[in-house]
Amino acid sequence: MTRRIQFKDMCNFRSLGGYHTSDGKVTAKHKFYRSSMMYYDPVDQDLFKSLHIDTIIDLRSPKEVELEPNEYRQLVPHYIVVNLSKAHYRGRSEQLARQTNDPYFMRYRYLEYLSNLDAVRDIVRAILKAQGPIVFHCSAGKDRTGAIAFILLKVAKVPLKTIVEDYTRSYDYIKNDKRIMDPTKNLNVYISYPEVIEMMDPLFIEKYHSVEEYLLQCGLSETEIKELHDKLVNPT
Image (cartoon, rainbow, N blue to C red; front, side):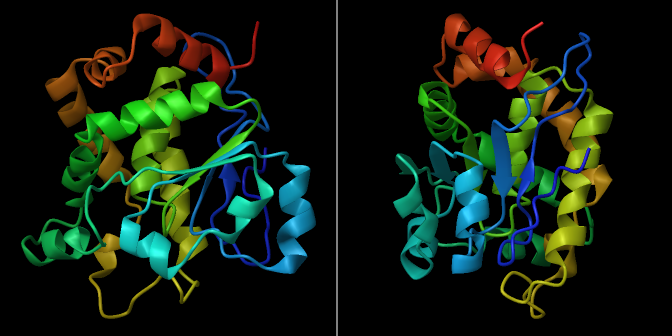
């Protein structure tokens, strides 16, 4: 299954559908999308409309939203901004890169994102409220977007190997987009190494024990967690 959707002006827009889960199900197709910055081109409008997106969840910081507004917000019933990084503007990842020689340091950044429990709660509730397909995005569609994709795929009971494979696709899609790639920054900020997720997962489990326990700590109820799971997978 080809999950990447070939927009003219969005390099990393793809579906989370069609992944097999550990309990014999498949993630719902045509319902959940992840993306890099949703750069607008009139050529892409018809393709975007054909996806029948109900909700856009913008994970960027206030300054990013101000500098590059998401023009697709005009085409959907619901557009929400959830500042997953808690920062006013980006820069923390590059700061971490300067402090280490470890190429997989982004695993710590993802845990920082996921420590924003209120934000994750708001994201999940926006997904539950949506009456149709949703897309969540940041700037590159790799880090903040990748952290949320990690949570959603774990809730759906997608095996870690598959979650890692989904994550690693980002660099291939963003590496030629000059609007995303900054040659002055450490390249390890951009490369989606499989080891990042492979090494982050046990740290996540050590801290939260399970994705269900994590979501309870976010303030979600057991009923909401089950509703999220059921929405993420095709009914049997």
